[in-house]
Length: 244
Length: 299
Image 1 (tube, one colour):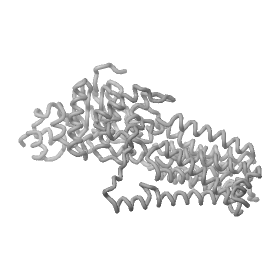
Image 2 (image 1 turned 180 degrees about the vertical axis):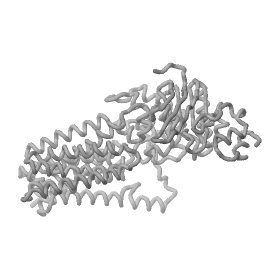
Image 3 (image 1 turned 60 degrees about the horizontal axis):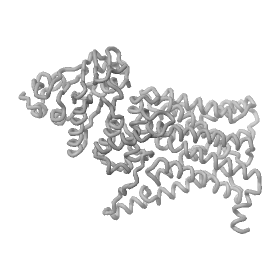
Image 4 (image 1 turned 180 degrees about the horizontal axis):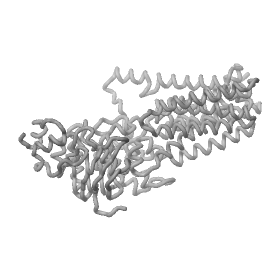
């Protein structure tokens, strides 16, 4: 099923949700060691593309292949933050499947959790109830939970949304580091400056891939017009160094 | 009568020994299962299953077979029907549940109306009849209770993972729908074995109130389960004592006691109670987020 070193490879993927075509012949490859941002307006299918890679929605056509396990960082509201559980225990749930039915966590599982907490700067907060965390700390918990699986591929849905600047800097550095270790990292974002600063490659998505390439190669306003369906925003393009 | 006699006197009677055992066991099992019901906001499902049990009891009554068995079948059927229909994302779960539990209760009422004589046998299922419990009933409650608690403990990490985040749990390959269905079935079984203690109408209190009370007192799941079990069992026993000495309805008293515990905690709980919140507001310099120093990985 999975070939090591494949990263994430999406070929000709079309997805329908009910009667609505959401993705249309999407081709996207994120190799091991690459950090790619999916950018597009609301309803462009960014989250659906991540869910299709995870196998949570069926493909109508096309194919998804990826190294597994895939680490998944959903948007923060998807998580039950009122559950009575500590940070470390919440991160450990990332390994529930890996630990296996009827088994308790072993030393290797605990070491993976410790390392994930360390990398996300949560070691000092490991015993704190998750309900008492700030937005940025919550985002780091979700990233740590995905890292606890030590995945070769990582998907993040809007990791930069509504986090403070220190958290964004920590995440940007961490994601670059993770890609540097040979992992394939794909994230969605509305935050163009963050995407341009953090990612080696941007992928403009609006139901299909409109354009992709390094940030400095995507300065043609026509591309952005096509992807976002609006008159090009000076502010938006300015953040990429584009001249409208 | 000395205070000690007050405590021991009810235990002279075999029917009271059985009542204490049945009420305490029911309360304990309901509290443990109820912990997940409360944390997942499934209180309404408990209500639906409690109502869903009724037509099964009525069928058992009409056909002259075991009422508890009829109730269990109907309760589990209702729980699974809710689990399946609520997978349709167009309808919210509580809407589906509203449809089902009114339907189930209507079926029960129509079935009962076919009978000319309405006997206490059926009334005991609506209002509980803990003093008329048999040794076999106690054994059944104990066996079913041990099984439920064992399943919850054994599957705790999976149940927690799904409760935290269904999407990611499904992406990791956990069978989230089956785990949901299992939880619904466990709710149904917990309700059916508790019918004799407090009856069909009040059983929801055993499921929800102890766990809700415990949630006000702790931020740790394991502690919450133990506290809920203690609060439920303590309330059941206290309610039975009150019922014995004042000759009032035991089911109702049990629910009044556990509700009293909830109100007391709601007002007085150190951090999440009303007084605690007021105190933090008055003294904002006090760190309202005490850190746990001891790492706790098992949750």
